[in-house]
Amino acid sequence: MIFGIVLIGLSAVNATDSAAINDTSNSTLNSSSNTTSTNMSKVTKQSTSSMKGYWMFSSSAAKLNSNSAAALKKNGITDVFVCTRDISGKYHYSELNNAISQLSKYGIKVHAWIVCFNYGGSFVNPSGYYSKKVKVLVKKTKYWGIKSKYKVKKKVWYKSWYIYRGKWHYKWKYTWKYVTKYRKGWIYKPVYKYVTKTGYDTSYNKKLIAAIKNINDNYAVCGIHLDYVRYSGVAKYGNAAYQQPGGVNAAVNTVTAFVKSVRSVVTKELSAAVMPEGTKNAYYYGQDYGRFADYVDFLVPMTYQGNYNANNAWITDKIKYIVSNAKGKPVYAGLTTYCSDCNLKSLSLNALQQDVNSANAGGASGFVLFRYGFGCSYVPAWT
Image 1: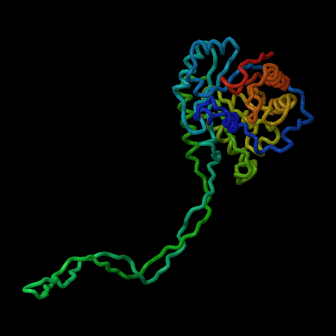
Image 2: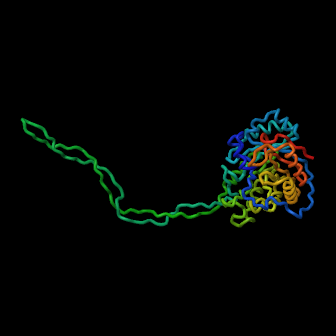
Image 3: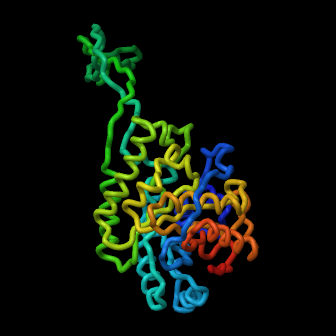
């Protein structure tokens, strides 16, 4: 979920896990994304227990032991989101089980973090809509010509000369030689053209929902956490919500319908990482906070100010807007432990605490840090 771009600089992360990074890459943003909205009503915090969480790659989950789990507990961590399905489509069940085994001893909740509509680094259209060029037969032309050729054996006679009693004589001899023969006839040549075909294929969604159900039913997780549950928002690839057949409303309906389908098979907590663009979220990504809130237990907006060239006031403003539209569901601020995707330098202790304080001021009920084992290892206070 966090940012696909982050992967470029994370040399310490293995290839599989680096693919699972949070999805808040913001190539679609315009200048209005960094402005603060006005006329916001006063935010009332939700009456829920606060969260101090981490997103965790499967490679880190595999290495968890009693000591590292105890350290998380000591730092006040309440929830860990373990990458269980990454963008390569690989599932990390053994790593998930290890995290459950180690963290449950300390009362830390484990959520299975599921990458949804990003596969192999490319976005999958949530509606299953496809548009592709296919070769179609137009007609067959007919003409007379050589249809095939073949070889046959043929006797070839020659004079074999020799000298007898001082004079030249010859005998007729032969050898076998292969010669090429040709068959003629009517030849039919197909003429093709390329046409664009469109349609819908929802098999990807069905397989993903089946896998989520399996995790919910057979693993001792506390919840399912959806990531990349959206359109990419990248207009040049035709994958922004507003570019879809039916426009923004259809795109929002599609994404929400998927979340609803997941809700129908999940009996534990269901959450989603969402983009933080506020009023533009549905337009670009098909994510409507209020519609999501009908089916999820909490939202985690990825308010990564560094990726937006923003400031602490921006975090407060975005959290405030999302809380006001979440229909009373808890909102936990997603924050990075490093400066930005373009600057992987670890945040200072003070800077990270200021981000947390800003989320708190906006009405967040806690925070989730991206990510465990990278960037600032300090766990901020929450008051």
